[in-house]
Image 1: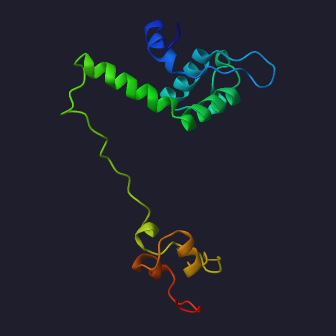
Image 2 (image 1 turned 90 degrees about the vertical axis):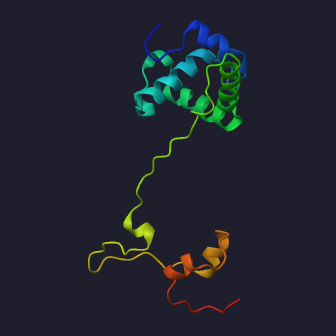
Image 3 (image 1 turned 135 degrees about the vertical axis):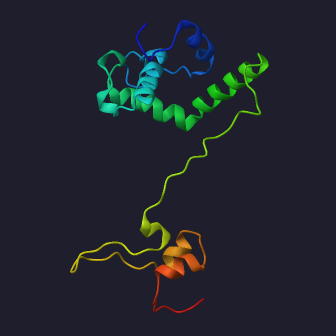
Length: 155
């Protein structure tokens, strides 16, 4: 077994939760364990998909499995089942269970400050009533600050 891959015990815990499908292309289906190991390799290393080692198969195939399983909620089911199992064994202290509360500072422009623009550079277009309505934000002080002077009929 190589680094970043599931052990037999870990695989036994998640295997029933992985959907089993037949390949639609007529080719042999890739093993689900191999695809999950490839996904975990990417998530644990932080490497781009194209840098996935060849032992996991084509990176596009591994990414397709990742995208489909994420869309179908496979990872949510795995997490829920593992949490239930760990809680039943008394390994989870719910008083300490928390979500990361760190934050990332937004750019100055996100807070309403102007962007640095060189003279002669084209500026972005102002927000319009129809754009705000399309974003389902209605009339508010936030978007009105960006649309300083508008020439459209009021509602």
